Image (cartoon, rainbow, N blue to C red; front, side):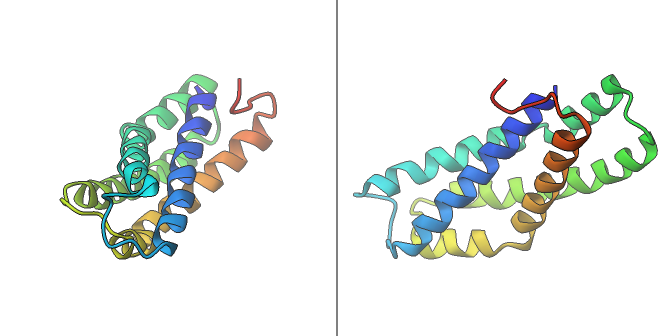
Length: 138
């Protein structure tokens, strides 16, 4: 279960890194360039990774008997809120007929997405240090 969560985090981080590079290109549209063709693909992968993220982590905490459970559950409320907020922002961008670099730059700057990334870094570090046998490539 933790491997799934780490993979979701990697997918979200890869999307963010791609978006940084995309924003730097100054493209007016997602049409006519290789990166433009990929931006929707990366965003859709992030949507899939975000969907049900907190539920997956909540299930893992329960299955692993992680304690103190109340502390994990309190953080999971934060993770869920940040994931839902980020999902709403990404889906808004995906709904646009044209996705230019400036739009992606604004999405990158979103406090919701940055909070989610920080949440995922925290979760990943807890999983890797508290459950050292878990590796994302497994």
